[in-house]
Length: 233
Image (cartoon, rainbow, N blue to C red; front, side):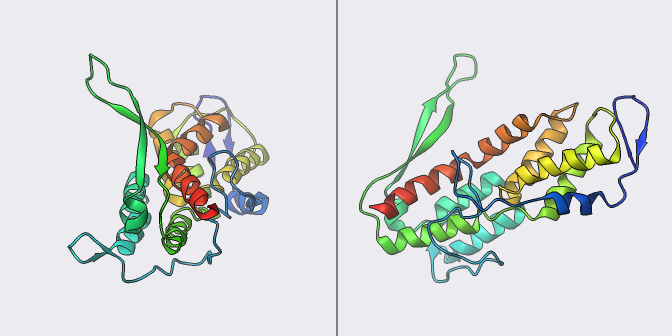
């Protein structure tokens, strides 16, 4: 049973709600639209099964495996950690040519600050390194599993207020949101939903959720963009 949190009448039985949501979902297999990364995010073909991480790549002089760093960040579902690990995982011919574009957001009151704007990648990266980097991006942008999206949406539903609705309306609402989440990786989905659960009092508009997802995805979208440009040269 789910109770509306806005004081309006009604407990709403949800029964097999998760099943209803799963049956309504239609994962998207289209190419990237705007900055969104879809299932075919990379320019190379990889399995959608658990990552088979490349071996032999080392980070710095500590001897730790870079793919293990990335795998750990993905497993911890921390978007900022995944973004850092991706850059750390890039082959030298790419990382040495990659630079950030930043917008100065400094103020007299709060001091120096900046906002990430995008990436630039200078010419000269080895072709094999571009392919490896695209593979790493693909592994870090695999679409969130439907059951994870359902669970996080139910968590949000219980954490915020919403208008009273019957079981069919509730299932349809969650299905619409879950379909949008299916375009994003698990760390982005979990982080965005839990941010909204802490920040919002009322159930958010779909546009608010999408805006937050896109914001958290921005670095990966930009990295994919410059790598695709390099692959096409």
